[in-house]
Amino acid sequence: SQTIHQWPATLVQPVGSPLSLECTVEGTSNPNLYWYRQAAGRGLQLLFYSVGIGQISSEVPQNLSASRPQDRQFILSSKKLLLSDSGFYLCAWSRGQGANGNTIYFGEGSWLTVV
Amino acid sequence: GNSVTQMEGPVTLSEEAFLTINCTYTATGYPSLFWYVQYPGEGLQLLLKATKADDKGSNKGFEATYRKETTSFHLEKGSVQVSDSAVYFCALSKGNQGGKLIFGQGTELSVKP
Image 1 (cartoon, each protein chain N blue to C red):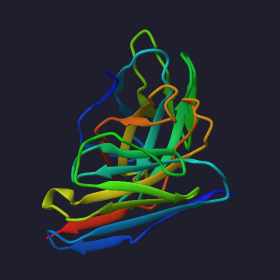
Image 2 (image 1 turned 180 degrees about the horizontal axis):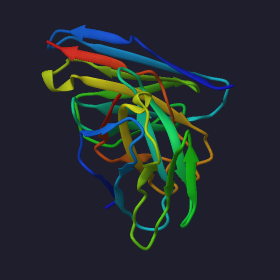
Image 3 (image 1 turned 120 degrees about the vertical axis):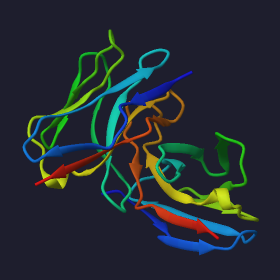
């Protein structure tokens, strides 16, 4: 069966510090990978998605970046965090054949508080 | 552009009450529609989905019907339980672009015993 893990689960970082959130998927190959952010009291916003190694698409301009160094690894990064980067970050995956009916499966989420 | 609109929460119900959470969408073409649930402090779990008009998705007593004529995908459950307390998200997939989801803003449901 397929599983998705992301870490750390909780992070408190000062403004201006770097960020690295990691996500790995097991039990499947060539998945589509996603990073979403959920700000407090708001819906989910797609930040990045990737259909293959080294292929990253950004949905919104922002202070964050993403990388996919391996097929089943997706990393969310920042060089200098802003207060507005605080939120709940969710990694997700779906099967690589991009039919629009494919279910997206989410990780457990990472709470980031920038202070 | 594509978008999803849900009824605002929080919705507070007594146990065994009937639940409806409204969801309408705007999209070109024929999107797939989803309901996800987020329990406190956790990630999102797929609750149900429908991939074409008139399909009915169902799971754990919840159901929703894809209504293209009204561009709606309302979530219903005949008798809610305290354990159903969570935030519910309606979403659509953005065509053949890797299955990206566009979410509504979420509706918080609180069920009291």
